[in-house]
Length: 101
Image (cartoon, rainbow, N blue to C red; front, top):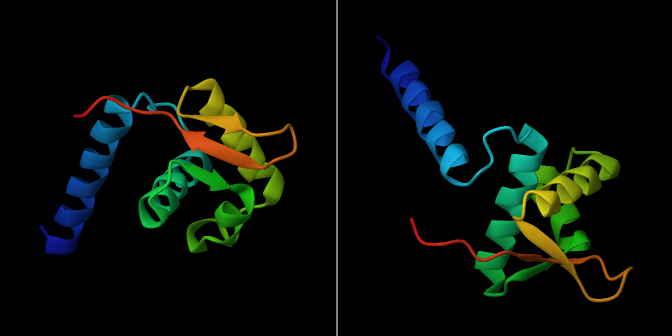
C-alpha cells in the first residue's frame, strides 16, 4: 500500500473517533470546520469567545457562504458546543467547556 494512502486512512479513522468522542458524529463538514475555527481562534487569542467577523476571516471558512456559517453555528449551539453571548446582535460566541479526554 502507498504510504500516503495509509496516512489518509489513519487520519480519517482518527477524525471519526474524535467526532464520536466530541459528540459530533453526525455533524456536517461545515459544522466541523466552524467548530475547528472557533477552537483555533480561541486558542490563538487566549479567549473562550470568538466573533462572527473573526470566523468569516479565517482561511478555513473563506469560501463558505455566510448563511451556511450561521446555520452551522446554530447547529453547534443546539449540540451544546457553543453559546451566543452578549446582546442579541453582538455576533459573539463562546465555546462550551468540555471535560478532558
